[in-house]
Image (cartoon, rainbow over the protein chains, first blue to last red):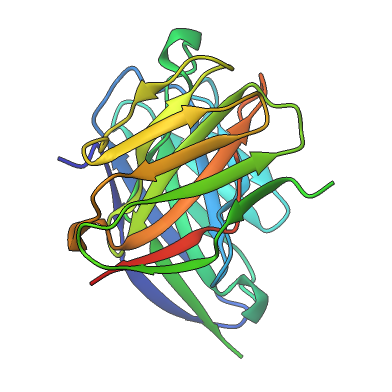
Length: 115
Length: 111
């Protein structure tokens, strides 16, 4: 049973276009929602993260939108570039110390940006 | 400053063999984690260690054991490897903040 569901599994976007990846979660105790970016042969690296007290967070071309009532959050990549071609994972955790900050990951989205 | 390092990078085992995956971090982090990554499944937590001397099970601990040797090192052991353990294994570490820092991974094939 996957507590964080991610879609689509893959997407192809033209250079300059917008990439949108969606995630839905079930556990209402989750209060930290990061996105990780992974290039082939490398480990994941934190891209951007949000807490549920805000509905949107933007860092450069990357934006997280968060809908607490729907238990959904999404990543928007604006002006997509070929260098953005990677696999993106959403994740969620509870920041309660006793819970150990264990991340629950979505299944991943492979993004290909065509020049 | 190497961050999180993992050895080996690649390994092929036969069913029933044992091996230990090594992980070390030089960031003086308290918490360390082991994940496995399988296609379409994302990363799933195997074990974690909140601090030196403590370990706890994650989502998929069966078939694995861990040792938090000291603050720097956290090893993952497969006592009797099975084909279902073919995967890419990632170690991660974290201090008191939110971000987990991942190593480069170990690609394990069990035949």
